[in-house]
Image (cartoon, rainbow, N blue to C red; front, side):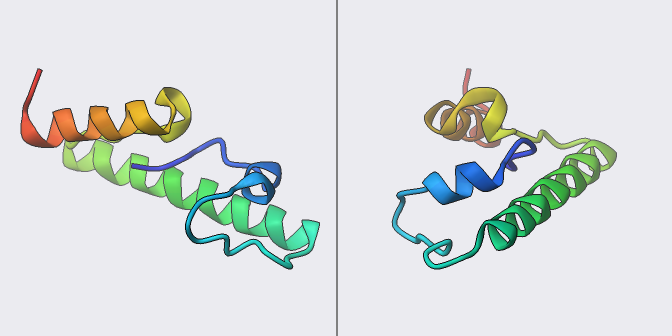
Length: 77
């Protein structure tokens, strides 16, 4: 799973259980989001090379992405 479209604004708006962005500057948020996008692309490429599924949270939405990953991993549906 990855998130190839993550932005600094997304990170700034995150309200989940681990708000690592708290106190970060806009530049730091953009840098962190860029790292997430690069890592997501790397994972997508590696999954493609290995012939395994890759789920992008941005394409499905979080809840649907979790269900899709579960379906793919467990072979349901």
